[in-house]
Image 1: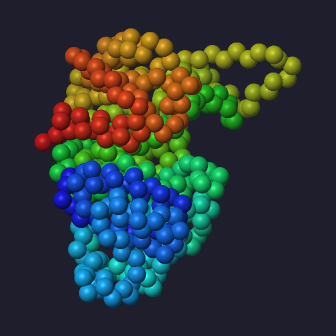
Image 2: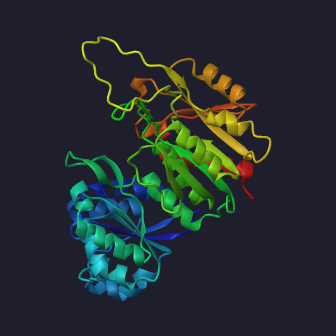
Length: 398
C-alpha cells in the first residue's frame, strides 16, 4: 500500500524525534521513498547524518540554501511528494501552522504544499490541554490537517497523560489508510472496548483493569480498511479514532443494549472485558463499615452479550469474534468458550499479572477458529489489530 509512495517527512524539535529513525526504517521496508526535512530544533535531537543514512536521501534543512534551490526549489519540494508527514508535531509547530507562518523551510513547505498533511503531535500533557493549543488544533482540523494521536502514556518529562506521540506502527496504519484498497468498504462493524463498571452503591463498583487499547486499535484498523465502525466504549481514557461512531456506556447491561441497538452489522468484535457478575441489589446509600469485619454481597449474572448475539436466528452478524482473557489453561478455556458461545473466532490471551498485558500496550494472542488455531508472537496492540483486521478482510472483504 505504501510501495512507491513519496513521503515528505518534516521532523520537529522534540524528544519524540528519536522515533523517526524507526519510522523511516519501517516506511522504507514498505517500499516508500522518504524525503526528510529537519527543523533547526529537530537537529538538537537527531542528526542529519543518521536521518540521511536511514532514508538514503538528502536531508533538507535551510530555506535559503543556494544549491538546494537550484536542484529543487522549495515550492517543487512541497509538491513532489504524495503526502506530507510532520513527526513530531510540537506545540510550536502546530501554532505556526495554525497561524500560517512561513519563517523556515518546514513551515514554508507546509504552507506551499497542495498535498494531504498528517501530523503526529508530541508534547507535555499541560501543553496539549492548554486552551491555545486546543484553539490551534481546531483551526488545523478545519484546514483538513489529519491528526495521528496523541495518546495517553508516560512522557519523557516523567508526567502521565495525553501528549505522548503515536508509535511508528500507528503512524504507518494511518498512512496506509490513505492509500489502501479498503477491502472492507461498505461493511459495518461493532467493536466493544474497555471494562464495565457494576455499581454496588453510589460510590463503589465492580470493575477490571482493561484499558480499551486493544478495542480502540481494532476500530482504527477497521476504519483503515474502509469499514463503518460503531465503537462501544466502557469507562476508558483513550480518545477514539477519527471516523468512528462512539457509544459510551458504563455497565454490562448498558453495553448489551448498545450492541443490540447498533445492529445490523457485518461483524461484531467483543474486545471489551464485560463483568460476568453484578450486584443483585444496588444500595441507594453508601455502605457503612461500622464494626463489621466482612461484607457479603449477593451477585447475579450479567447478560451474556456474546452468547445472545451468536445465537440470533435473524440478523446475526456474518463474523462474530470473542475475546478470552485467561489466567490458566488458555487453550482449554478459550476453546470451551468458542464452543459454548457459538461465535466464529476467539482471540485468547494470557492476562496473568506478570505478562503485563491487561492495561498494557502489548499483547500476545492465540486466534482460535472452528478448524484451527494460530499462536501470534508478542507485539504491540496496534500490530495485533492490523493482523486481525487483515484476516477479517480476507474472510469478508470484497
